Image (cartoon, rainbow, N blue to C red; front, side, top):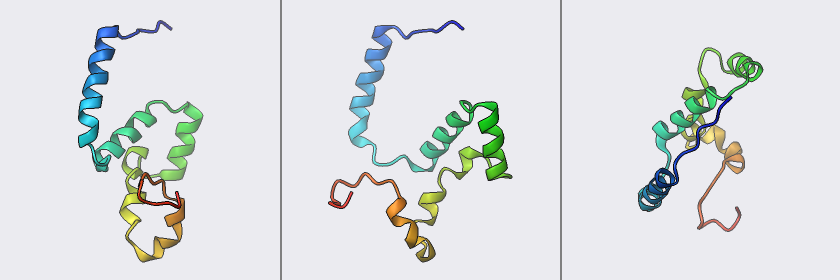
Length: 94
């Protein structure tokens, strides 16, 4: 398998754009989560793909990536709050 490497100028432009836009990004949001799920679906081994399909059927990985955010405010799921990934710099208990 032949690998293609990006030209240094392309990498530099992408890096500068990412740095310029990063301060304005606040959260992934549903579209970002689904995009990551879709990318992940394309990188699963056949065995992992079957396991994920069995676990999530009839849903797809790309569409369940927002589930944790969707249930976060429901009282019956408060027990899962310590398991949530957080990036809140104001919390000392992280």
